Image (cartoon, rainbow, N blue to C red; front, side, top):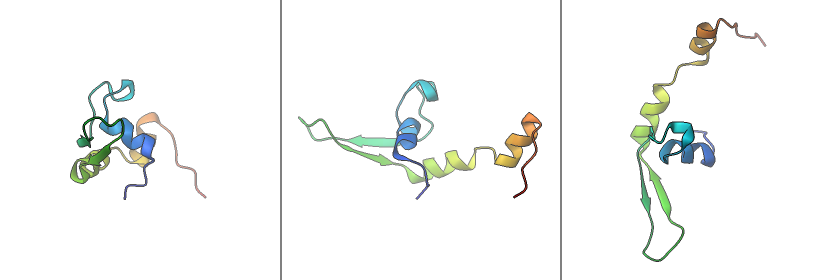
Length: 71
């Protein structure tokens, strides 16, 4: 759906150092009582909103004064 790896998605939905303990994407963690494993349901609208708010590669390069490499 997003092309992001599972570990990247986990960093976006769970509090951790990389997101300053404030996950930018909403998710629900479902687990049955007495079990160690569960399911993480990621809010697609929240993920898409987060991704849309990221700067594009061209904007990022402009901000740091770089130039795109032509193929």
